[in-house]
Image (tube, rainbow, N blue to C red; front, side, top):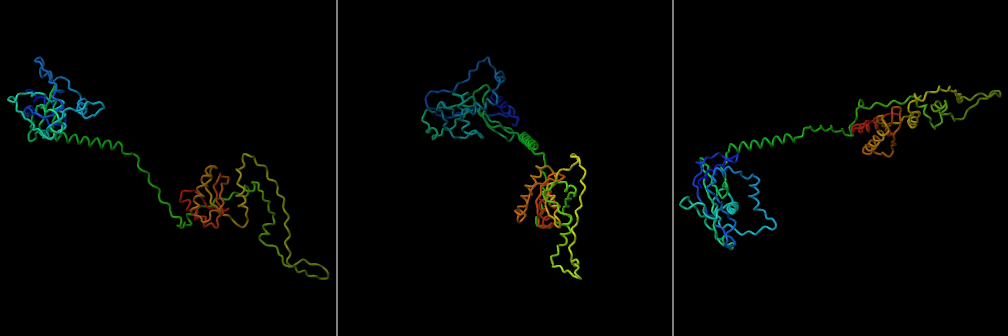
Length: 399
């Protein structure tokens, strides 16, 4: 009892966020008696500490205290209901909240764990208080009434005050509410905010989202003539002639015959003295084919890659041309992949995609994805503009 004020000061100032008190701030040290009920008349569970004259308070205060984890485990292990745990035999018989800021269940556990079976001080030596019995709680458990004693003290610091309970222990176990320092609480809150901001900054993504691509123009928008894709050059006649073709070579007179159709009208022949004269509209004499000198052999290393026969056939078609959509030159795999994209795009914008032919053809520059024939160059350019807007590198060319 004589050194209880020093123990309360040491307990209170141990917390880093509490105000700093002195021994003079502790007053009205006394004893409080708490009513309980137990299942049997035999007392048990309370062991009084034995002190000898050879042990001083300073030596007891210097003894190592249990760690925070050990104190927490000791405080909460009473709440655990493990299998095989002994049934409870003691219950509180009071309902008065005489300790501000502390629940009655916590006061009950503290009294059962650290209370005195006998009063630690005589009534004339220290003020004492007896908590009133709650008859409803006492009758809820049939048993024998008994009392547990705890020491109590008040703490005043300016306009702030609190009250604590002290039980048996070396040093004494203390239960109650501390007086908190607002400056220390503010500093702790600011530190937590800074730590939260630092964690948020470290977890914030560093990469900036890429800009979204511009929306593609509508397929129905007209394409200006200046934006038309230039035509792909037709391979020279010498390269087309070097490719073997299964079609027979036309005669030299076929172009002229195609230009002027043959005369099928009846011919009028004038007769004079039995001599026959040529008709008025005689047919032109057939041109004599001229033998061509064989070209000198070309080394195999200098020969260009063979051209697809279908392109050669398109180039030889007299008097007409075929409009086709072609992709950029590349290897065979790239041309096949582009052809699939072109077919998918034409299905959505062309009315009769089944009337078109599509394949990959080999040109001197490489393999090209090709779709043909289109009715007119204007329609082919309009469809090509739609494919270009969707990211395909196609062109409208004439063969």
